[in-house]
Length: 339
Image (tube, rainbow, N blue to C red):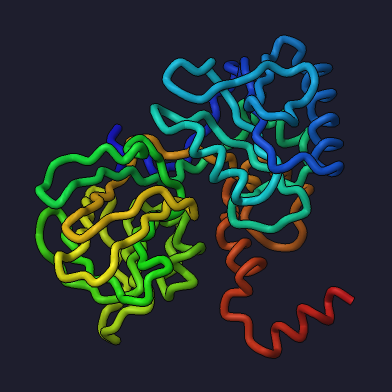
């Protein structure tokens, strides 16, 4: 199946084929995180004693787990469990720069985010659903990129293998001058952009940096590339949405008065000078995220609504997290309901 058909698809974890290995990815080990990991480890060791548990090679590695090193020779992992915020999931995605990504089960640690379907208090129910093959996953699209020098030759930028979950941003950084960037779509010149920068995001990333820059909100089940300008000089330069089969090339113009910094999921990775370019396309390897609604039992629901596996986590999140289309009256009612 091609990347454009994989990304955005919902799939069922296979019953009768439980995970044999698990990788824990967590934010800085505060006491809350330490207690959560200890509780989770105690549960899986009692209920799934043959499960191999891995953790990154960090100073705060939990006791009794195996060290895991990312890369082409990494130990196989069947399930990733993250504890933290959305940034923890982005970090987990970056650990799998080559090849397919195992399903990701994400737990929030008191933080809110679009990628956090489970609260840590629900760890037992969520883990059991994943091990019993009852959970469904949403394949969230990722991006890959290639760099080219001014003469069109590939550049060794030390990040060709990055798989980006949210966005790639080309921006002026600390320069006082606007960037001048030529945009090509499938090799065809689209426009010359004079702006603070440009963002190419996934549907998942459409509610991150792109949204703050005025981009559209795109459902994560879609396969698309979102091109959003950052503070463009032209008021008619509006965000565009392209099919995931497209390739977008951003080339810093020879006439640009500033170099352009390149950020991937918020991490600065490279600086492109005049004539240099980055080409962005859909990755072959989306990241499968386990949905909260897929493990909900009928008795967990209150009032009307879709049944287990039918409810859309995204609809819930844009209302709860973004307060989508919330009027002054609805905000007042929301505050009143919390008192």
